[in-house]
Image (cartoon, rainbow, N blue to C red; front, side, top):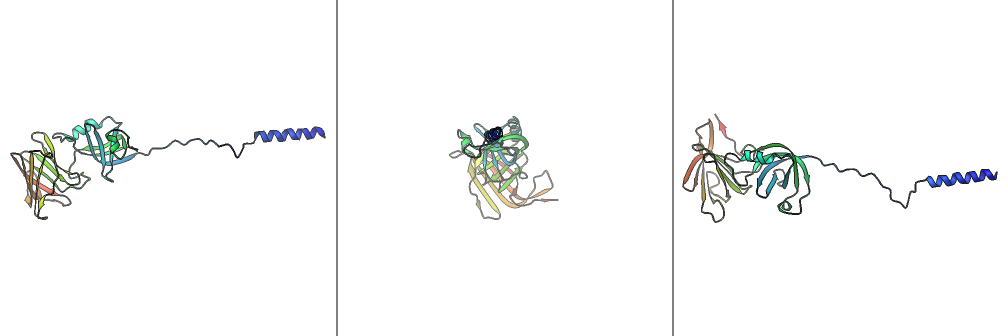
Length: 241
């Protein structure tokens, strides 16, 4: 009887020693690794001295770009060819991951870091892929040239393919009757003597190289040079014969 009693006490003690305490000690749970979801952004990409940014057209946020593909530099140069504009914005569709912004340098002035893992599209900006509003898109032949006017981008962007040069001029409010004529006068930089004058009129126009009938003519005076061509107004369709 006494032997049975001692055996029972030993068994009870063993059970208590092996029980997991329910209180008083924090239980360690295995950590779950965070998962970064890839994102595809569509916007304007700019590369230059101490500048490497993507302006997302969906929400207008600006991201500092880290290029894991190591291809953006060469693709950007190709997109700007043959008449590059300093710090030119090109149309981009990029896939990668979004992270918090840096705390140092120019990257700290953006909304975050976008690490690019795939380049889907990188090409020169035109009226077909533009994802920010623009007022006019102009072009001419003999020589070949192009010009974009966009208050949303804060500039007038000129490309002369004949001499392979480009320039960005400051956007300024045009003199206009609101319906048939617009005159823009601006300079290359504040205080610059290089002036640009653009006169756009609502009238039929042909570029001489296609069957497209444009609804606006344009005369561009840049220094001593005068260029003539046709224009498309933002939000309007053009007729084809």
